[in-house]
Image (cartoon, rainbow, N blue to C red; front, side):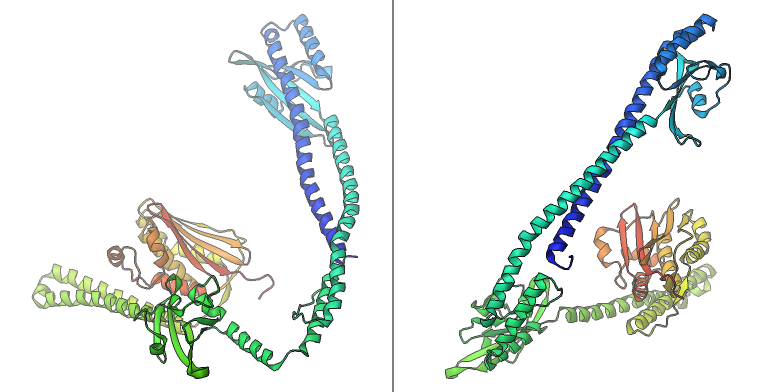
Length: 587
């Protein structure tokens, strides 16, 4: 039955109705429970408060037999199905509508104790033997601000739950009836949908003798599948009628459609006669530009009015949409009667230009970063040669500066070599299934002394059941050391650093959260660039090279994860990266 569209429609219709009725049922059942239980609670609370107010004048008197009798008459008139107990401020039962043998005994339940302390307490409990539920309510009897006794009520809830059960049964009975009626209605509606499809199939078979050129992929054995088979049969019949010229045109169209470079054909009057999808995409054409002058699409940077004959055989550059850099090459084609047409090939060289610019920037940054410490070292060496070496204090301070700058250059060269190996894919990896919680604890231990010196609190927040991750432990340590070092550098005293790890589906998400000075929003998009530093003077003072985050990004991406930064100035920074978790059962 369910192999046909009719059966599928009926099934979907039933499932939708069932889902909607389930939602309504959950809301209805919860509303009924809330209404009856709330009404029941309100009723016994009202009774208890009324009794508390009425019993105040009796409790202020001496407990004579007449007073006890009056109290007993009062609570008996309100007892109904509930058991009512009147207790003095010591918790002793003075009167009850239930078992009279309990008079004189102390009631030490928690709700009674709270009521004698001045607070109302209500709780629902289930009798372990009978399975019945009871509401236990205790309300204090006060003389102005002094508690002089309590009203304690035990109300059975069996009738309430019986009523709720009966209403639920009525709802489910109605649901069953609705599903039956829905099934009947669904069958009727499905016929109105499938009958036209069957009719279209019959007409398609009749059109098999025509010239309809379409091929569909048959996926199912239902009515739509039969329609697809009919169209395929039409295509089979039509293939014999196609001539060789049509086949060549289709081949050319397929090549142009799937060609990654843009191709534009222009006639002798510079009107566009053909353009492929790649060219439309590169030039940002929303409408079909066929028939428009080529000068409306191509604006050459060298000369916007350059005629096509002068373009022939030369590479021209111009700006595309969204700032892309495009390269055009025009080739002439001789047409009929000596006319000249042109085929223009367009290529997107934005990424190539960006890479060239990145190389130039990288060389400039490296030169600048190395020149700065070299200049400092040279200056201090000259000062030492000029006589500063004779002064012990100056000599020690100058040599310390030279040592610091030398160490910074060593760190920079080491990190550059590591980046070079990462870029060239020559970095050696030792992937293992490691316990990330242990790694985080080790990192916290390594930086504990430094954090205490700077009065910074560091916490590790990771569940002990965190799944293992597939990672190189040494490289992961390097990433965490870099992120924690940055957090410590930019977090003031009394600040907090948190190392948080949580499981997210197939990944483990690790966050390094600090309450430091934060990063301006304008700097966040470039924070992972090499040698990019938000505050260059502060970064150099703290010994930063501007390469740590770039290395961390490449290491995390080499693990199959990703890394990003969220930050608010003067509120803190959160660096988040993900790692693939080890699948269950993996060695």
